[in-house]
Image 1 (cartoon, each protein chain N blue to C red):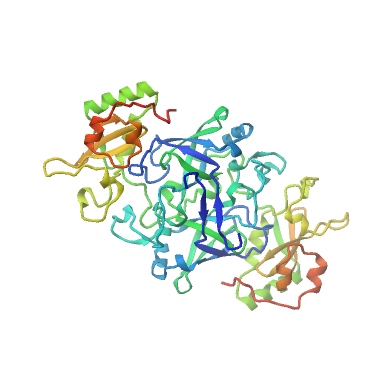
Image 2: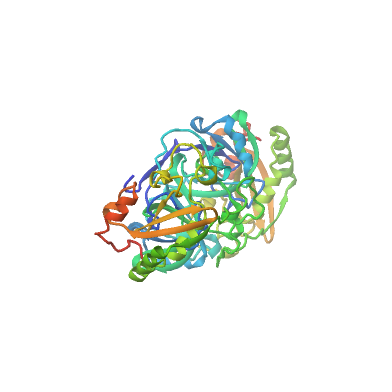
Length: 283
Length: 283
């Protein structure tokens, strides 16, 4: 420990609606409907102590960006807030591509389930099955710094889109909600209202190197706009953008095989629906 | 990484005025005069990128509670805010005795020294030479949660004491300030105004098991109140409390040998002053 190196052991894991990095909210608290279930590991689950969480309304989570393996030492990233083209020091951003792969999120306490060593929280911004290394109370007198300023991230990202649903999508989502007793539509509406697309797509469409979104997006043709897929629970939500309107085209339940593949094509989505699974994370 | 274990490498080290755990402010931002110098490690020091820190006024530091080695798995701690006697879940507290030994502090940016790969910050609450694992900007729109509530830590700890100086102490501090060009008196005044004593000392003096403060405090006699020592830079500040008044008795410069010992007695302080050192951390 003299050289400052330290090893971390998960104290809990968080289950969230997000099955891939694309579409995960860009900050905690942005999408209130994004619910997470924190499942404590056996060594750190004391049912008698779980009710203590009632003391505060919000908590900080320190967690592992476990899908990112930061290998190069480059300190420069291109945050979406700066248009996706301008480089800045990673430590002046919340970019997920960072040394030590540590995430920090403020979440709101929802309910406590002592019987299952779980606490339920709102406003999560991590993918499903993320390891949690520490939880600390949000202390309003110390953490809410009203005088804090930022030159390029002072206000919340604008909700860009009016989210609409094709009739097919609405029916599929309603059916899913009834089947699994989990409200998906409010989450999808809140989530997609923010622009999840890479900064170099859309109006500023350009030539910058890839991001996962591109891999799972069908190529746009001059006639029809590009179709994107977001995985929410076990659903592949297909959507496209025209002007200020985002239209959800369909919400197709995925098989276990599809859930384990990062790259989805429209064909795969249409053909392999034999293995309908219950969502891993119904509330 | 499948089991969620992760290893951390310092990206920087922070130099602070605090040479022992006793007297370190109980939260970041509480003692504005507490200045820290973040020295980036060579791999993470890009002089060209250091000016980027100007973009935001405050930053989060994720750091290692490297003096604490949490070995037992007990989740229950007794925070001072609950009187020091009531147990609660460690994850509902900011106690330094926690699994994974991770600290989280919001600090204010002061100055940037690109030539030395340093940034200077204010409001630190860690001991000198603490490893830093990540730095993230404080984003007002996401991090300043005005609606957050807490049942037992809603307001800042009260400044309990009117801090006074014996003439000897005042002279010693003035001399130190002139010699090292570092303002110590404002820091001492702000720092000691909060009650650094363990909850079981003072009015509620009791019999609870020890904390480091006790080890370095001379035993009180019925005639005179207990004397405490706080190490600030290379000074041993001796102080005592009577009613609402805290009196700084002396400020003695320590030798390198004394600085490396955790346990100080008044005798040692009085006798071994041969090796006067420059402070490691003058600004």
